[in-house]
Amino acid sequence: MPSPPAAETTGRSWAGRFFRYLGNDPIYERWRWQTFAITWLAYAGFNLTRMSFAVSKVGIENDAQVCLTQPQMAWIDGAFLAAYALGQFFWGVAGDRFGPRRVILTGMLCSVVTGLAMGASSTATMFVALFFVQGLCQSSGWAPLVKNMGNFFSRRERGFVLGLWCTNYAVGGLVATVFASYMAEHLGWRYAFFVPAFVLAGIWFLFWLLQRDRPEDINLPAVEVYHGEPTPVVKAGETPEEEPEGSWKVIREAITNPMVILLGLVYFCLKPTRYAILFWGPKYIYDRLGSGMAEAGLLSSMFELAGPISILAMGFISDRVFGARRMPVSIICLVLLGGLLISLDHLPPTRWALGVSLFLLGFLAYAPDAMIAGVAVVDFGAKKGASTATGLVNGLGSIGAMIGGVTPGLLQESWGWQRVFTCLAIAAFVAALLLLPKWNAVPPTGKTN
Image (cartoon, rainbow, N blue to C red):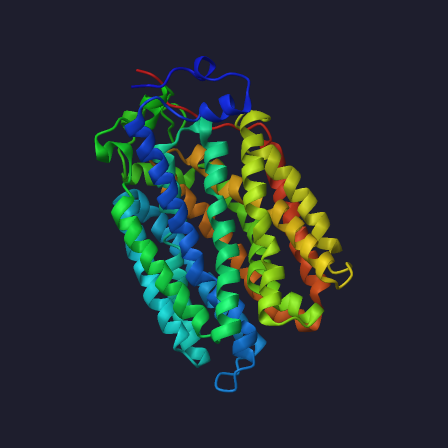
């Protein structure tokens, strides 16, 4: 069943280059792209319950029955991010041990229930407790779904396909921000929790109906067999047969893989920027422009709007220009990101200036984010250890996200936004320096018997 070599099935046209990602078996292709669609929708859907609190902050702050202060809201964010970081390590291993399907269905259902409970809450204590639980639920999504995609798409196509797939969190965040902002503006801040939770419940049902963990579960061959590629391994020099699916041996080797650890440290330095903008972007716009909740949320969403464009473009470039190497694109974007962060607060306080600058920030932040947390970690963690490796990288990144999500709320009033953005810029430059020695790094493949 392997597809013909790419050289035989594609020409030099753009259409030919695209169709090299497709095989010649309609049943196999239906399952591949069905898996792509439902896993994309699943992670995009997780953002519905994740972004509710961020866009509700202005309404909550002005609600006489709640009256949360900015430092209190920062600690509520911190509870979420701490739980999200801890959960990544656990759910990453669980994804390899028990399979993506069980993990995702459990985490998504719990996220729906928690979102509804948050919408009914009125005290800081309840918000802290429930957003902590929401963090655990949200952390169940990324690592198992990345593994799910790695099971259906092989290395030669992952830059483009996983780049396209990684638009889920950018598009999901954009739609969730605008949707929740609209609900908060027109129905009240509590509906920014209620309505997204019900939508996510519908996505849960579709996932249950349409998703499977790997081709072998539906009596199809592994994707490497289908494409005639060597099977990836976690540790160089081993045969694929030495690495049973879900074994503690695979999990241990994924956790101790030096490249996976390096990617985790880089992600730790990168993630603060993304979560500082996601969690505090609407508040930053509100402070500079005095906008209402809807306008602040809309302008802040320019950061997420750039994500799909950036991820897709840089994923294609990493495959076609850099020969499936993910590091060059990441390094270039990280350096430019740091420079833009330093200049951000010096821009004029106009809608156009802030909207364009947030769009550019998103363009430069989302590409290395996707390359590191999606494509590169699957390449170097291999399929069998992909969920564990992704969980480790995202767990370390989420510790950085906790810093980025909490710091603006705690320090902005005394430091000012400029110092906050300068700290984020320094972290981006450090990430670029860590990656620089790995400019030409590629993952190992298994030896033949």
